[in-house]
Image (cartoon, rainbow, N blue to C red):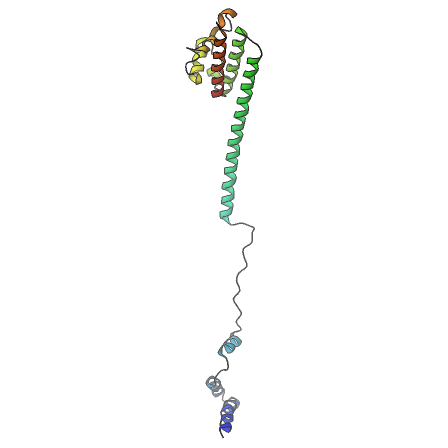
Length: 196
């Protein structure tokens, strides 16, 4: 009997669906218990799973990377230029000091040595300072310029004083002893190191 009752309960919605009134059929479906609500929802809306967007590609980079690249490039160019300038200055200094060593080893003495050292100092001064300031200097004015540009008073009041007139003096009067020659070389080398 109970079995007949359950058959009747399941047959009732089916009969209601076959009835002529569509509103009654809809009410019967709503009143009927659903087998699985998730299946009904998925079937009615046709939902799909969540899809993540694709990962951004390597190229083109974001604007921040362009800015960083430009900044790094500018720093590298600045460091390269600074290094190149330092290298050129170092090479120039080495060349000038090598020329001084050559003069010292050449065996020149007296007025010839003084004239050669003075010519070397003049060439370096002309390359470093304005031509109008250096080119016409001779005698005391030349010694004053050398002291002002790194001589520390050793040209006007020290061993460098011989550069003013030593190139034209008799050999015996240029240097009284070998120590004077060595002192002049030290003064000239110091000035060249500071100004080359």
